[in-house]
Image (tube, rainbow, N blue to C red; front, side):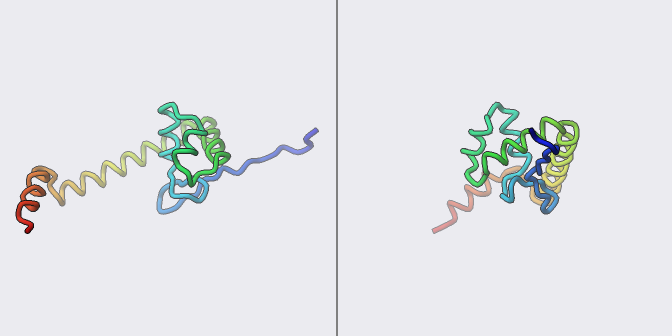
Length: 109
């Protein structure tokens, strides 16, 4: 019989404003997205070989138990990404990129 309540540490590290899984570069966003698209923990661990299967299970469990907080975090990440995209498009007009690149190719010897 277990006499004390076991606690499990969720293998998430907050680095540069991003939650990463198990000390890897794989983000929480990536694991949650794959899971929401129907991938199993085993498939996710296989697709991202730097991930430990136990860490993937722990992160999925954390997501399922803290869905509101995780969804809020993911919404904020999407908002930040959208802001960065808009800033980049304001600096570097994406219109005509293909034409400019093709023109550069023809100019090369």
